[in-house]
Amino acid sequence: MDFIIISVGNELLSGDITNTNATYMAKRLTQSGHRVIRIITVPDIVDDIAEEVARARQKADFVLVTGGLGVTHDDVTAEGVAKALGKKLVLNEEALSLLKTKMSNEEAMKKVATLPEGSEIIENNVGAAPGFIVENVAVMPGVPAEMEDIFEKLLARFGVNEYFEDRLKVDGFEDRILDKLNRVVEEFRDVEIGSYPKKDHVIIKFSGRDRKRVEEAKKRLMELLK
Image (cartoon, rainbow, N blue to C red):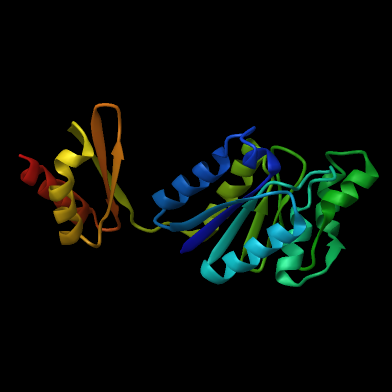
């Protein structure tokens, strides 16, 4: 499956918070044999959220949205998702029931439990705000521990495909191996090959669904480099 991750939050765009959520989800999805084709960050603005969600759900099989599910004025993700899907915001009784076991402020509970109509609730076992799925969009809280709790439940639904990866450390800089690396890339188009330069060496990552082809690609580069 192809996925797009959308992270919501002014704090991400200002650099106040590192987007570890997107990294976590992308890695877990990749290791499960899926493909992340976009990672997008948007501010806490309803129209911006709606625009990106509407676009993303046309390009990917599934869209994963994190952030903006709390009780404050800038928690507007549910509204943005509803607008993207052309749905009304309604008080979700299941979400409200779950929140009553964790919160006491009625006004806050109603805000968090007001979700796009037809939402399926995913319980949050770590915090308060539940996640929800509506059509091909899943929305999770931005607090990393809460996101991970809900995401792992979702991941089980998406299934696992064969996926293998291997790495090769090469001393020196990328320009030294460029011609040979490009040759392997051309020969193994079915293998994802990434080059990651470090201070005094380069890490070449080989990945794909066919273990034999991944191993052959690495071996081929080793042979060319001698």
